[in-house]
Image (cartoon, rainbow, N blue to C red):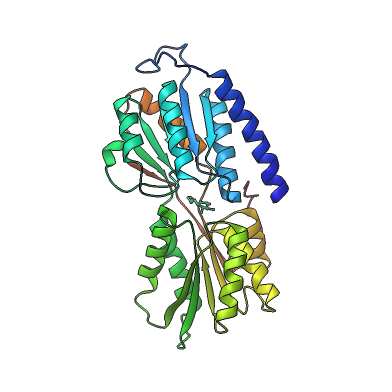
Length: 328
Ligand code: GZL
């Protein structure tokens, strides 16, 4: 996984540098792209490379821009909001036709999005949402994280339908203040709130990262010897937590029921091997929808304010033998 990340990093870094170098200075923006010789320029400010999901998301965006004949200016923020804001400002200065970005957290975007609005550059939110003024962006493209949290709760209620005893749950939370973390927590709690046997005994941030998921779960296991369920906001943290569970001499998927979100290949393989009990899909393959929506916006078409991607649930009860490779 690490080697794959490094290779992906190198490729993206070179690509990003080449695009930015080839795109120095300002450019003359046209109001729309109906004249055939105009190439749409889209600035994409990615938040980081913290998980297989994110690497798959970046790959989908780069490939979809190429297939759509869109010139992509790509930047990566190493999970720092200040970097994302700087990168968006560089797109404004260059006067790209349209900006798309995955806001690492929900707040702190008003100023830079107001600047984009005043520059007449439409903004697409991808993957994650922001709080506040909806006039500052044209649309959101991504998953419904509340629903994903509810799906996790529904699996749990089915799994423990006949159990009368208390069910102790620990939760590994994604990046604090991010919409997936906030909403996956909220949807899960809403879903299990009608049965008091479910008790969340600890909730710890693992920042969507495998290393931090393992570290956090190691500490939780030292403080609790009565854990029945682990609910992880993403697969990377779940895979890290599984390593910690095994190091503690416990059997993941048996001693501790594990629910995770994303649907990356490694998590599906763990599900097939019985080391995870439920994986909720959150597709990172947003590239084609982003590029199609960008073209529609530039052609003056009305688009929906929120364009949700359908997600599926994979459980220990499903026959996954025909599931095609996940691609991330
Ligand atoms: C969800 C996305 C989350 C993934 C994580 O749309 O923002 O960020 O679930 C990723 O794997 O780090």
